[in-house]
Amino acid sequence: MRDRVDEYYPLYWLRNDDRAAYEELFGIRHSDCYERWGFTRTGCVGCPFNRRLFDDLDVVEQNEPRMAKAAKRIFADAYEYTRMYRDFRSEMRNLEHGQARLPGLAE
Image (cartoon, rainbow, N blue to C red; front, top):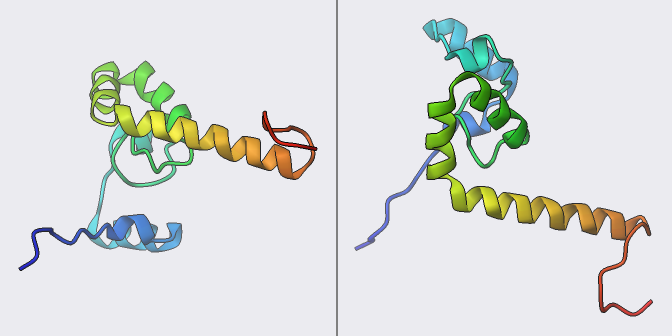
């Protein structure tokens, strides 16, 4: 017997036009994050998979500080991993373009 539960996040995989059609069909109204502040994707506020994560967190901080505080507490470890990954990715891109060298690597 399995001890784990399958997880499925259908909104994560929808394209923007699919999402818009679903929202219109079912009369979905979003929070102010999307309606007023310009968030571009549906999902949980502060989701670590969001490409605009840190920009969106700044917007939430300005408009709903308690929500930002909750997101930062819930996703604290994931945010740190996201920062580290993005820094690593940036270094790798720079390295590929000859703009940076990692310490300890021979030329």
